[in-house]
Length: 92
Image (cartoon, rainbow, N blue to C red; front, side):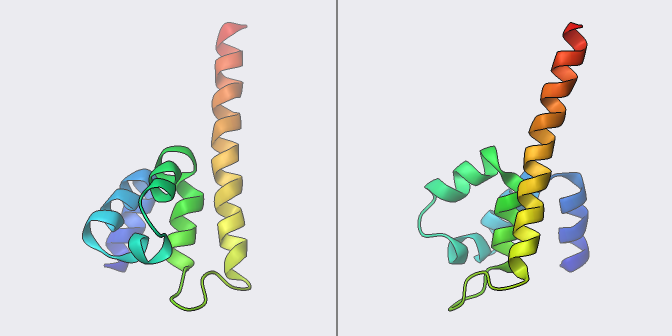
């Protein structure tokens, strides 16, 4: 399961989140309801994926685990910035 999850993560965080949501209860354990994870799949997929993977029952995300969630934020913001830079370069 771990190797398949890693392979899916390399392909796409969105695909990985949808597969986790459909075939496991990890997303349901980490979030109450479906609005926040759905927004996460659309807007911040790496951040949501890291939060889901490091969330633990009774404790949530603790200590060093927040570093991985922060790395997810950096990857998401970086992908938006890279897309904006590419669009700007294509107009020049």
